[in-house]
Length: 471
Image (tube, rainbow, N blue to C red; front, side):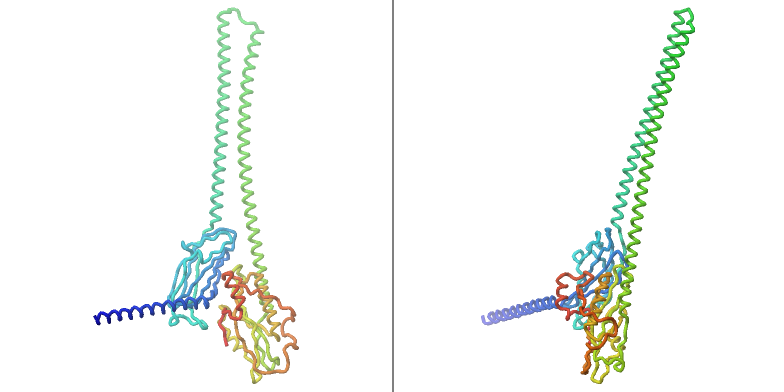
């Protein structure tokens, strides 16, 4: 009895331990999910565009709860309908190489100006841990590299146009065939009428001969010259009537055939003129598009040319206690839809306690690799307000000319020395002072983030993580 009671207590203790472990596991999972939802953010992946008709973009969430999600978007930049195959090659830490095609059916179907979103794609989640992942600030990521290729492009609009053209050609051919049959029927009718008229004339001639022969048999007396002349006139009138009817039938057939050929020629001429007009319209649209791209490219180049690179002056050359810079970089400015720029915040370059300031090489070494492209150090300005104004003007002009703006953060080198001269009393080294700063549009221009993410971005600008923060 005691042994049975002891076994019962052991089973109860074992059950309680299992229950406790389950509760702890559920608590860990719930905490991880809450932590992921709080920390997860969508980080844009720079992608070089290879086809001006389509813009491929991708974002990742970061490795926050044991896995990292990858979301893909495809924008149709044309007014035509396409079916394309987009092949993705993704190189990841922990997971290795991943290859797949976008779309539930491995095909991205894009109507005119439509955008393919992750709701039409498979879920791309990949698992890992910090032991094999790549450090990214205070978090980790699996991302190493991403490449894509468009292996197939089907112009659905062109197929529909060709089907419609083929159908019209078949209808036109059917119409011509019907006209040919009608002309053949008219010809046969004319031949029948001519044959009937000829038979009638022959029958009249035979009748007259029979009557003449009968008259000779029963009238032994020969006809007088007047009667012979009357008979001749009657025969001549019958032949004239036959010839007139025959000529009228032939002329009518020729007229009908001429009208049929004229209608066919006019229809072909109209089709040719319509095709030539359509081709001229397409060529004019293409020329206008190339001209607009030229204007965009020139304006983009001029916007950056107006803000050239500038090294940090030595303290012996520039006495100001603080000067201000910002960094920018960009990729293919000649791309119609793939041009992108990275622009940093305005940061201070101050003086140390010994009166010196950071060297240009120091800043460039620290900022190298913040963006995928070559960084340019631009400045300098005597006030934060002047630098912010120029930065705002650059961002606004680039957004107007279709450049995707990516923000990055760099702390700079704030000064520690105390100087008596204020920066507000000095003249600027570059540009004019504009008292009213331009308003910066901080919304993402690539259209990849949902609306709630944009709101978070605006409310927490100081906490955004578009690049690496360098202390």
